[in-house]
Image (cartoon, rainbow, N blue to C red; front, side, top):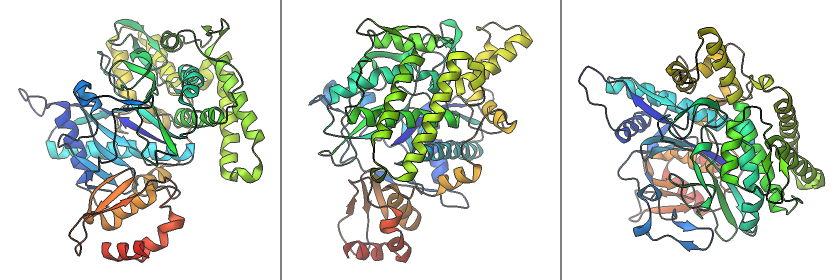
Length: 505
């Protein structure tokens, strides 16, 4: 699994009369600034290998013609924009008008947190370098909307078995995505896509979803995305591209977001849900959950029952616990079981607090922390929800610059719980996970980056001095290319020719 985030971007003009650069130009400048490197080579510019990308292929069995596709769907071309492959196995590039950090593939929810926070650190450094070189202050925000009608995504990716019927995923995962907002929401000032109504809501993304199932990600957004682009052996795997999540700064929110989703997908793959949780109107329910700060509003299910978002989540928790209990000790690695038990305990504790007193979660959930912050200002200054100051606070909470971020200020004061240390985040910024193919990708960028012409999630392309043709190393299995498998080999190679000789052996 892994997370990718598009960051909001703005710039303060260098002087009176200066024209603002287009966000795409600004984003390109930010990515290039990070790729130029610092004292430590933490990333190198390289092309992206689009050969195996298929953004218009639909899981439901067809492919959209390019002539009929919206330009935003054509993600298999870079339009000449900057692209950097990082030594931690991640990708930093320009996605339309935003700088995007796509974290490396990992196998645990806590590793998602580490590499997601590493992405925030990457962006803070990139903004600092870009500001210095551009002579103007460039600011990046980890949020999902500009408050004026535009939304940009934080997408999750989960590798599933191809044999799992996709209609089962649609029927059983939709209600989970709709109701999980109660702990994944980042909080937002404003109701409606353009914040046309004053108020506060749980999720930054909820108001932007308009369909239940579909291929798009930037228009007519669906709750279940159907892009069939596995970045792995397509005969064995399907990648579920989840676009409903918020951009979380809280480590607990991120951990719960990906950890619970991964276990619910295990339950669905195993055919072990055992109950019908389909919602009568999923899109309407998406908004209803986000707008209900009590988390108690009943949602109508397809069979006529009514359950709150918290009650629906309790069912998913119970089924996940039951599946964990049914798996023999020898069939599940001890670290996976330990994380699952800790995750389920936190899931339970969060749902219990949501059912009684949301303020108890201000030290661990983004939306609860932000709401508490907003209410303190509202009480002190007598502000209504339409006050521009509150919208500014919302934005400053998400600033990636630690010296400006209100989230960082809360952390510094000990008011937000942490799950990882600054040292772990810095290590994740520079070094790849050790138990996936991202290890090979990241290490070859560190050791032989000048010989890497292009890369993708499932390939690395090299230019060898003694060979006329470029050489592609396929990485179709996400669990091959780990530190255990290739670490010693990479350490023993003095140049890229040694690497290929070793790979040949």
